[in-house]
Amino acid sequence: MASNYTNDFVSDIPLKRPAETFVDDPESLDEVSMDELEFDLSHDIKDINKLHIFHALAVLNAMLADLIWLGSNRELFEKFRREQLEKNSIDVDELSESSKTEPEQTTSFHDDDLPLPVESFRPKAPIRFPSVDYLGIPPVPDVDAILNRLPEISLPVTPIPEEEDVESSDNDLLKSGTLEGGFISTESLLKTTSFDVISNPISEHSCKRLNKEVLFHMNPKTKQQAEHLLKAFTLAKAPPISVEDFLLRIRQYLPSISVSVYIHSAYMLYKLCVLLDVTQFTHLNVYRFILALLRCSVKKLEDIYQKQKSFATVGGVDLKDLCKIEVSFLYLFNFKLMCSEFILNQFLVKDFVSLRKFCRTNLKSQQTEVEA
Image (tube, rainbow, N blue to C red; front, side):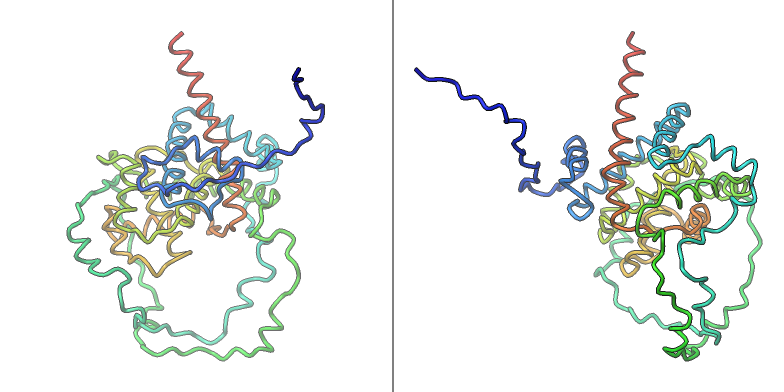
């Protein structure tokens, strides 16, 4: 007579960790399953080094859709933002009180990012930059012919009074084709170089640094400047193209943009909207924010691939507007674009997955209330 075998210690047997199977990479955005992608990210099966370009596009598109929806529900947005800041040991109420009692401390620059002031590394002799482009050869053959066949789109912008042009006194530096700079000796570099270990390096996540950034953007003067800068991103009306199609257009005509650029841009947009609460995304401003973030990230990470004119043509803006939204974003973000692979992976595993779950749960509850 056969007997059933039982083991009281089955729960102690370690299970094999879920691993990524050998599957074909997605060839379109429709082939990306967001449920599977969220599962892989939350269980450390995928990270930024294992994402395909369409995975990165799906992350950016889904995140923007959720943030636009949260922007129309301010109460839910405040709830989600409070939860995310509490995970970083930041209390919004305490910050609000401290910004009222000690406003002068909120405008200080983040001095814990660099061991020495930037001025100590600048050469004293004037530098003349060459006007010759040494790259010369375009990376993509017949790129001009491709751009000429590109269907045109335009992003109408709210008319803003034109500011007076300011002539730079440094234009004469670009007229010379020779490079002249002062000699910097190794001894002088050693004297101005610090080998001390930084307590809060910018390559790692720091609750203290995030607390200072949030406090900085709560300052009334910073908010007043942000209100002026945000005008550059606002369109007169929503363009006749969805955010998803807009991202696919960029992917089609600028295929050199890497996964790192898309994920880096997604993290910066998330931080600007949720953690720093600088702006709310709508269908009137999200397109120009996408252009500004991608262009700044491309210049920061891989500037050799796209020309300014090519990017402006694909994005549907002229060169002047593209430059304007780039500079406006840099000032909105206080030029803090540096982040490491560790921070981006933390964004994918924690912040992005939390945003998706929060929006999915509250959207279902709202639909249930409407049906009832």
